[in-house]
Length: 369
Ligand code: ADP
Ligand code: MG
Image (cartoon, rainbow, N blue to C red; front, side):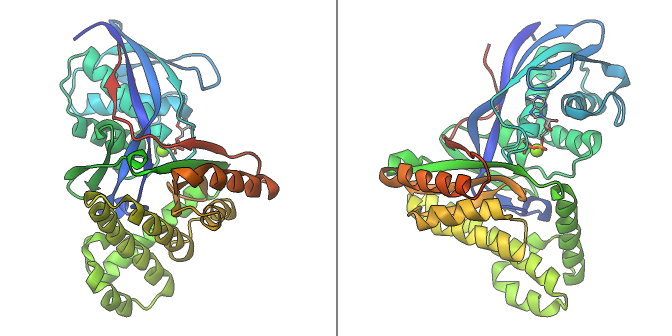
């Protein structure tokens, strides 16, 4: 236990496995070297005082004992307040703190700034109060914070990625039982570059559409008599599709089952050192999200298609969709030319300047001072 310190928790990119986490399926995120940094100190008066350099307005002060869903001003402070509430609800003797946040994770870009914010808070308070909460526990509590305190129905991927990733590895995660495997992933060592292109768009209907996809997947699982779509094996897909009368549900099932299969294929390719083989699987995943799950949008499609035309090995939207980011895998020798084409096509279509950065494979949440 110590009175003060600095902690950071990363945003993440999901390499493959999109919209599978609420179907008890597989995901494969890795942490970015972009983090939310929390400078924190204990307070003995039970007050949680939160301030973010990236949020408007002054500090938010909340008594830890009063925290409850719906309590407080709402907005960004619900994420850290929710994390502290979830720790307290789980029986941890957590007290007050002064916390200042600074972030290099763009918010709302599909890179999971929200989990970085809640996980860094849980880690800081765990250390400040010697709570002994383990990483997996922290992730579960942070998901509870997002689900119940913020009211965002997210799965467990983002929090697990921020809490449990290890530098130079993807986190191959089974979201049903949280069993996981770290698989080495070093594109640069193979002469490759993995790039994130942030479209900087977020379509307003994204939240409602997410809820509809989730409800559709649950309805399909009920119709098929399985606890979750994860229980439909790839080999069983044709039979499952035949049993579903509704073409909309069929398309959702087709995406989830083939996407889970793609995660396994990417895991096998990486384990075999065949990093280039990941490219076409990314592209397949994009087509599935666009055509079957219908969560892409013109901005994402333009980036992905232009990248492929310009010679990228593969490209796909990452995150929930309806905006956010595309990841693309390209030969290092051709990456600049690909990105030049992508940026010109994007700005030429009147979509503004995208954010572009190389996705280094970084580590999970940690104390830094
Ligand atoms: P994503 O997690 O993909 O970035 P979300 O919509 O889940 O997108 O979370 C974004 C929200 O998280 C922001 O609207 C804000 O409330 C909160 N947030 C993220 N980063 C910060 C920050 N540095 N300071 C304050 N709030 C933040
Ligand atoms: Mg989020």
